[in-house]
Each structure stands twice: as C-alpha cells, then as structure tokens.
Amino acid sequence: IFLDVPVDELKKRDPKGQYARVESGELKHFTCIDDPYEPPLQPEITLKTHELEIEQSADILFRRLEMDGILEGAPKLTPPGLPNPDGDEEIDLHVPAHLREERMAEAETLPKVLISDLDLNWLQVIGEGWASPLKGFMREGTLLEVLHFNSILVDPFNLTDNKDAHTSTTNFEKFTQFRAPDRVSMSVPITLSCTEYTKAAIDNSPHGAVALTTQMGNIVAILRNPEIYPNRKEEIATRMFGVID
Image 1 (cartoon, rainbow, N blue to C red):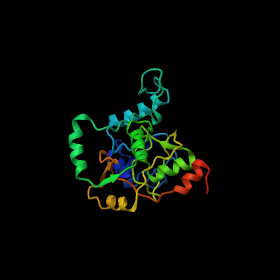
Image 2: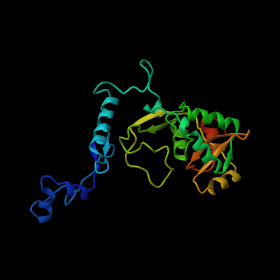
Image 3: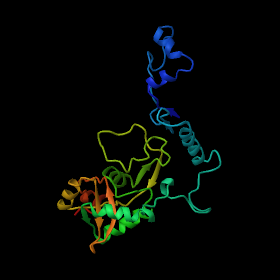
Image 4: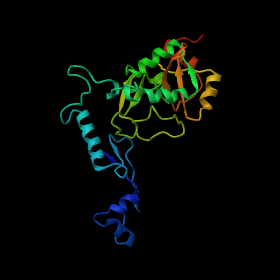
C-alpha cells in the first residue's frame, strides 16, 4: 500500500513532532527531507489520503481485500452462479426516465452527427454493457491496447488512480507511473469513424458534445468530450484480420 501524500501535508499532521525536530536541526537523515525516498514502482494500492476521507480510504482497502478473496470473497454484482461483468462494473448508459425529456431538449441544441446502422449496433452494445467496462467508443489509447494486446488494463476500484483511464483524453506525453491492476479481454476495436464535415461539427461545438442521429433522423445519444484521432484502418485490418492488401 502506497500512501501518496505530499511532504507539506505530512508536516501539517506531524503527530509526534518529528518534522519540527528536523527543521530545528535536532533530527538528521529523515526520509523525504535530507534522506531520499523512492516510491514503489507498482504498488497494489495507492491512497492519496490528503484527498480522501477516512471512510473512502477504508472503503478502497476493504474492496481490494474482498476482491482478492481475503475477507469474504470477491464482491458479486450479479446473481449467484453468474460471473461478474468484465472489469467488475455494471454498465448501463441509458438515460433514466426522469431525465429523458431534459436530455432530449439538450440534444436538440447540439450539432448533429449522422451514424450508420453498424454504428448504431455498436452504440447499443456499449450502452447496454455488453462491452463492459467500456463507457463509450474507444479513445486512441484504448484502441492501441486492444490492437496490441487484445485486452485493456482496468482499475474498477481506483486502487492505482486509473479508474477513469479509458474515459479520459489520451495523452501520450503523460502516462501514470502506476499500472492498473487488472486486465480484461477486449479483442475487437469499437470506434466511431467520422468525415471531415463531421469532425468540423464536433470541433466547432461550443458544448464539447454532439447528438448522435440515425439515418431516419432519430436522436439516440449524446456523445460528450469526444476524442478525434487518425483512422488507423490499415493497422486495424492487419492486426485484427491479418489483411495487408
């Protein structure tokens, strides 16, 4: 367990007055001050206790102990006899009934993006949780994991601060130093292609969102914070289907 807490926060806590003794010169060779501290490279659990309530930290610990079967077995999200969904998280992206009118009104104000029947099928797969733990079309980082490893790393209980890795914008210049603890099989790329016209509509949306619309003109979803990246069609064809021509 890695308690990832800034030194300034530790000085504020200091129940034994150790940091005060260090600053006065009474105590030498104190870790993080005049002696180096090397954080663990791949801790099983990372707790930023300066950002979490005590109950939240305890909940993360208990969830991990349960997940590893140390306490009373892994938590079950499904009825007895059925395995948990991939990623240990139930995904249902349907808008609750009491919010549908509000979301439809919002969608009417957004740029419309036309999707194909195939895209609509994938949207249903994602929305109903059949592609768990995906919560949307794959971002570039997620797609590359699928293409190269036929799987994705997940952190459903946020043990390494990677819970939102697949819903956050891909940033190849900034990778977390803590690897997500679990791997989920994911061998099929689920992406949403777009034309230059559609890309312009997305880029120019002041709301950071667009309404996905079928060929019959029906609004079926709101796509928020979309990530646009080059279509890796050759790489997808080669790695997924062995086709190079």
